Image 1 (spheres, rainbow, N blue to C red):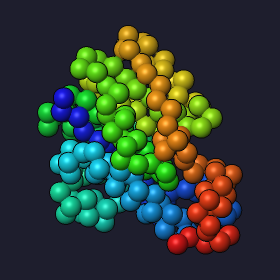
Image 2: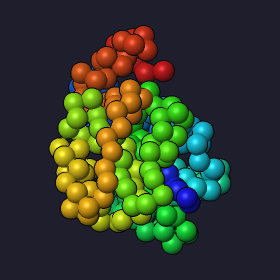
Image 3: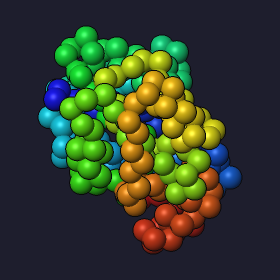
Length: 205
């Protein structure tokens, strides 16, 4: 099965605006850079570079990814679902029969998590959804075959993706793994992450 990984990524200075009360612009940019690097390393542990696609509006990140042998597309519509739709179409045009979509802000993700997500797909049409800890949002999913109009990221996206899979009569699996469940979308999540990493208050290494 020719499977691709797609990672939509905001410019590092633009992400994590909900953490503005805790972190300044430069600190948030450093955090986003660190999180993206973690997700990319996990993807590279499972996928070859030429089967990884980053979709972003950041011209510097586009150039960096292309320089490392990855596919990189400019997100002209500025939204995660549009970015994944664009990425899915590109992957299909290049022979993909399945995709793994990964949020770019998973601090504990490992290559084992990505491998488990990829391996969860069968050789027939199917979908796997990895929810967040509250089982409200979606942090990653795998889909065979790729479909540009499938993605429902946003509030309550876990249930929305379950409904989308059922509407297409796709066998659906829920993959619950620690490395895929934690994101840093709220100040509470960040505080816990910072405590676990022993990051001083208001600082980011």
